[in-house]
Structures are given as structure tokens and as C-alpha cells.
Amino acid sequence: MDKQQLITELQSYGLKLLDPEQQTSGRKGGAGPSDHKAVTIDGTTVMVPIYNQPAAQSPYTVSADQTILERDGELISLIAFPETPKFYNLTTSDGIPYWKIALLHSQDVLATTVLQTCMRYGDQVNACQFCAIGQSLEAGRTIAKKSPDQLAEVAEAAVRLDRVTQMVMTTGTPNTTDRGAAYLTECAKAISTLVNLPIQGQCEPPDDFIWFERMKAAGIDSLGMHLETIEPHVRAKIMPGKATVPLDYYFKAFAEAVKVFGWGQISTYILVGLGDSLDAILETCDRLIAMGVYPFVVPFVPITGTPLANHHAPNSELMFTLYQQVGGMLKRSRMSSAEIKAGCAKCGACSALSNFEK
Ligand code: SF4
Image (cartoon, rainbow, N blue to C red):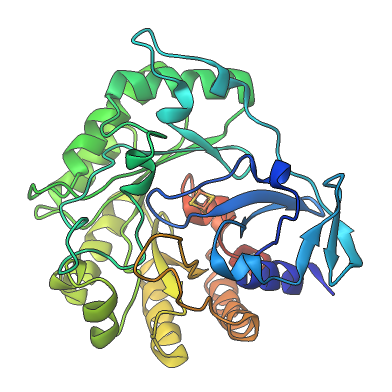
């Protein structure tokens, strides 16, 4: 089996860890894709679901010494798990462990949710059905608001001790018209004053696009504004609160953001497997790429404890077809995840897409 196919399958099926000792790290809950763990296969680090329901049924397992990936008991590939980063051992002067402020994602990405609360989370009428932003907070694995100084302190240590090469800052959506852009700006300013680290900000489109210039001036190099789903009936069902922001408004925001951050420096998540048709996804990817936005196509990962915990992950054949088609579009447009200065699409670990760009 080639690497493209293996990663695609692993991200759909997940990985069943037989030994509880193997389950000690990884992301449970939080914003964005979760319930998964970083694994390195043949030099590529990807996030693979391990804590959710599909993973418990997966044909993929790991040998007791954690070095061999097996499928139905047969050897498939060598596998490795990234080591716990050194900055996790540190604590801020006010007694907060650094790992509650930001986490290592994949191999060299520092990731944080600056505001761990969201105006859309917590009531069924508005909440995105796939989201677990409140879970890690409830479990005491993070803090509700990371201060700009805390983030700068952790970022400096992560670069110095663990050779982190980029930072992803996402946010729950506050009930303000800037939709979190103002706080991301404040945080980026503090980080970029202390350490030289490419940063991606992620938020909903703000009311005033002047925020794009402010974010850029503060040290944010690239921006993610995430569609998640596309077709109106899917948006209304899966993310009823977020669906009140019209798709057209996202596209207006993309066009303005490309002017500020540059062609190929804006990206958006598209979660596959939540009801959008293949045609709708492909048409949207085509439109996005034509305007300079990287479509980060990601298989939906059902997260334990969310309303979609029992929803199926998309099958790997569908993902493979999509990756081939979107990979071809990216190639023809000469848009590449490697050229993005920072962000999820650059990291690429939650999707197999970057393996199809070449
Ligand atoms: S793609 Fe984004 S969410 Fe996934 S591991 Fe990389 S930085 Fe984290």
C-alpha cells in the first residue's frame, strides 16, 4: 500500500491502541479536530484518531513496543510517536503548566486556543455539532483565557527547547463584532515582540475587514477562516449558529484577506463526511483556489461527548478521490501548503491532502 493510501485509510479508520499505556498522550476535546494522536510513518507526521468510536473498531493496531503498524495483525509499516516536548515541564510564574497554555501539534507546531469559550457553544440551538471546545476546559486540561504574556512566554520556550517552527492560534468566538480578531491581534503582538515565529490566526470573519491589516501588523502571517461545511441544509444542521453568517460573507472576507495577507496565505477548513456532496465540495475548492484561498480538506473526526460522537467518519475511498481531485487543482494553480507561512494547511497533519499536491 502506498503512503497516500495508508494515511488516507488511517485517518478514516483510526488506530486501535491495545495497551492502555499507549494512550497516555494526544488531544482529547478542544477546538477543531481532536481525539487523535500524532504518529510518524515513513517520515511523515499525521494526526490519527485514537480516542473515538471508529478507532475502537479499526483494523489498524500498533505492536506492544510501539514501533510497528499492523493491519489485522499483519505488518504494514514502521511507526513512531513524537516525544513529549521539553516545554511541557515548565510552569509560568503564576503556577500554570505551559501545556495548559499551548500544545505541540504534529512535530513542530505550537497550537493554542486563546479563548477557550465560544458564544455558540453550550446550547443546542447554536453550537457546532462537531465541536468539543468546552471539554478540555471542563476537564481542567487548559485555561479559559490565555494572556498575551503567557503565550509569548510559552512560544519562546517552545522555539528554544523544542525547535517549534510555527504557531497556530485559534479562538472560540466571543460575542463581539470583531469575532476574536482583536484578541488574536493583542496576543500576536506580544508573541512577535519576544520571539521570531510565523503565526497563523484563526477566527470567524470580523465585521470590519480593517482587522486583517491590524492582525498582519501585529505579526500574524496567515489567516484561517473556516467554512467547515458548505451546502445550506448541511450548514443549518451541523452548525446552526455559525450558519447565520452567510457563505457570501465568508467569500467577501476571503477576497479582502487575500489582498492583505497575499495569494495562498488564507486557508479554510472543509470537513468531509457531514453531508456535503462531492460536487459541492469540489466546486467550492475550485472557487477558493481561484481566489487565492487554500482549501484544507479534512476527514471529519467524530469526537467523544459531542452530538456527532456516533456519526461515521468518511470512507477512505471518498477521501482518496477528493484528495486526488483537489490535489490536481492545487498543482495546476501552483498553490502549495509548503508556501504558506504558518497554519493548519502548512502543518497538514490532520489531512492527507499535502501528499497529493506533488
Ligand atoms: S493541522 Fe492544525 S489542528 Fe491538525 S495537527 Fe496541524 S496544527 Fe494541529
